Length: 238
Image (cartoon, rainbow, N blue to C red; front, side, top):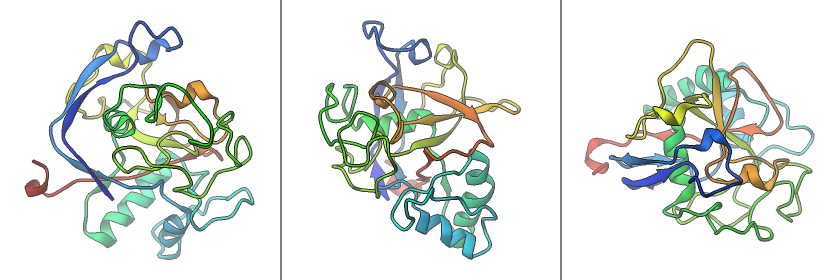
């Protein structure tokens, strides 16, 4: 886990970005008042399988024949994560693990930058795993976690590899009334949930730090995974 410091940032895309989608606007300031911890890597098959083997997770996802171990777990839904994996993890560790909120995810992905990607505005070569990233896994399969350089917070694969489920309900007009404190948008019955960061088969535009995606909470796919956040004791959040 990596401790992400408190701070503030501009969430979303500016009006000047002609490539941005409407659901990325209006750009707005978000204040993260307390530090929080985030998993350095996307949750792996090894970690998910530990939950299955312990009886905490009923769903054993397919690896598409690509291998497990240090590969990010895929074919897991938001429901699988929040109803199986997280309750088990909290029970066995005694900690308070959860999904990141959408604002926390973008703050962590940007790591103090305001560029399209944490390494700059140009996609470059071999900076991530996507359709067009010019890595050995592009548009073919997931890469083992940590195969590329981390961002300035020390987090790996925030862009590409697998889309990451976050806590929030998806609403294309969410930013008009979005919380400014980093909390999740209010829950709605049977809502789609937000995914961030794109994946091994996503295009370069979907890799932008501000790009948003929304999918049914029970949907499983070979490009969907997640990472976790952990609530820190009060003494470490200032």
